[in-house]
Image (cartoon, rainbow over the protein chains, first blue to last red):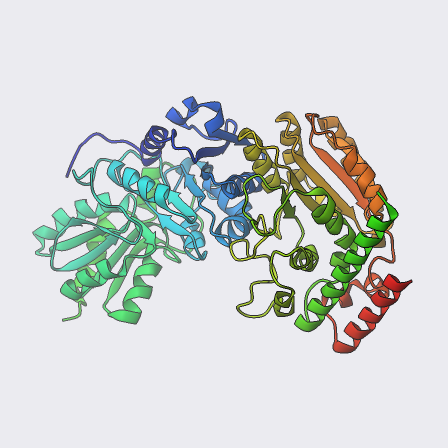
Amino acid sequence: MGDSTKTCTWNDFCEYLASFAADEDFILVAQEMDIDLGPLNGLPEEKVFLSSASDPNMILNAAGLALNGKKPWIAGISSRILSRSYSQIREALALPSLPVRIAVPDGGLSCGEEGASRIMTEDLALMRAMPNMSVAVPSDRNSVRGIADAARRSEGPVYIRLGQTPLSQLNDDPEGDFSFGGARLLREGTSVTVCTCGIMGHQALKAADILDQQGIDIEILDFYSLKPFPEQALLASVRRTGCCVAAEEHSCIGGLSSATAECLSTTYPVPVRFVAIDDRFVHSGNPEELREYFGLTWKEIVNAAAQAWALRRR
Amino acid sequence: METARINELEQIASEVRKDIVRMVGVARSGPLEFPLLISDVLVYLYWEEMLLISQNPKKNDRDRFILGTEDGVPALYSILARRGFYGREELWHYRRLGAMLQALPDFRRTPGIDAPCVTSGTELAVAASLAQSLSMEKLRTRVFCLLEENDCGFEDFFHEAERCANKKIKNIIVIAVHKQRSGPDPNGLQLKCRDRLSGYGWKILEMDGSDFASMEEVFGRLDNDGTEPAIIFTSIRNGRGLSFAENDHARAKKGLSIEAMDRALEELEGKSNG
């Protein structure tokens, strides 16, 4: 494992975004006093578009800016952007495929104290199902930077789920390729393919040490690009291991679990186990407690990997 | 405006209305009443007011038009065809599989379409940020946004309207069309809207959207050196649409049978001759 300094992906993102704010087509769209923008607060006035206190208007403002050749970055609370403005995202951004990037600071359970109405455990499902939308989930500082670069080059809309949970570096490759449609190999193995995104890559690495002692050598892939989904990376791994576990901080419906199952069931059927939140609303609480409560830790990955391995395709 | 020019514009509007009936008739679906009502306004904008070049529809310093209601789409298609952005034959494929003229404008495929048409929300926010962005580039480009007056009653609209006034976005002109069918101002919406907008600092104007002389007079009053955004409350005289469409909204929405299309064309022919 790489650098032990822990940072949250949202702060990494704000810091990195500020570094290329001088781009001619850069503009940040946000609402006043809505979220902590860190170093982005210091951007010049012409680089920040402050929307009115209406979430749908923020999306439509970004569309208007994109129509004049800008490539806006929207920063806003996930529950408000995705639920209150879903139809605006769909019709004004995705349908005309405008280059607008949506970044949310409160992905998964990382703002667990805010409670069920604010915690979107179905955000990836909503965005994945939307045509033309790319979906990315960074898991450390390197992937934040790589994904931001890929989004910067993108000509269509992108949803980036960030979080507030401090995370260490998953590997030491700052120059790694994070193009959309790719996956990052975190650990080579031969027994079970473990697909992760976001914080679950960190949990999977912990699980790997335990499973090693049981003679199960897991391969861990970080699916930072949930859409386009890196099918070839998954298939190449699963053809060697013969079984799969998908672990995500999201509902078991519509996210990485679904993407994995959709891909494998049609191309190379193998036993699959999911580590995800059941189809239910979550409670408010400390993020770490919530992850324990909803079964999103290395322990569940160990169990799921052992089960999948026992049933593996031989 | 000279009488000859008014007659010319009325003739164009009449042809536009007939094309709307034909395209909705051939498609057997699509809104009919509202497109017929706003035809005169669009003809005035596209022939008299807006700076645009059909041969170069993406020219950066052109004026922009944003249609804020899906009900008006056939009128815009018909106008763009007659203005030379594409051939009229495209109209007869309206709403067909693979056709350029989709039910909602495909902003990437259709020449002359400046923005996607959003069915759920006020397009004012799109128009306002586009206008603001254009003015920051020191372009004198104006953004015209046509909305149904009913869409001007939502809080999201007022939030954006307030922001427009605070930012002094002067190159945005909203045309809020009132459907006469629902009476002069049944819920006091227009009054409420006017009060709030003028409180924010908007310029409030009023015009008859079926009278070219009135339109010329109102657009002439838009002061290019002012600092405030403008809204033009536009009423349309009854009789600009079709007799049966004006009285039967549900039926008009369902599209036209061949017989109804013939009857509608006869009615429009009669109006343009008489």
